[in-house]
Image (cartoon, rainbow, N blue to C red):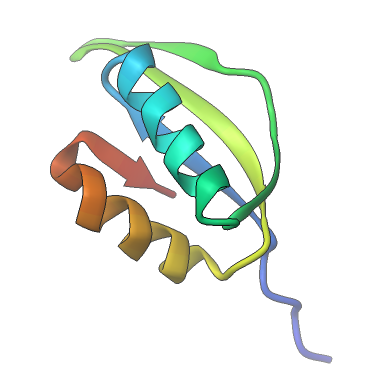
Length: 77
């Protein structure tokens, strides 16, 4: 039995404002169905912010959309 492709992804950014801009950009381009709560990750290398989203597109399309607009400031996992 084949495993279904994941329809959710996690978006990570160094600053909450960068993350909010990326979420707004993805919503305007109709890439997201819904957005979860923004969480603060306390890592040794500094604070980061993450959010779990449900996708309308594939994870690679979302990653490409955000990388073209925001470059290295946004990471899609």
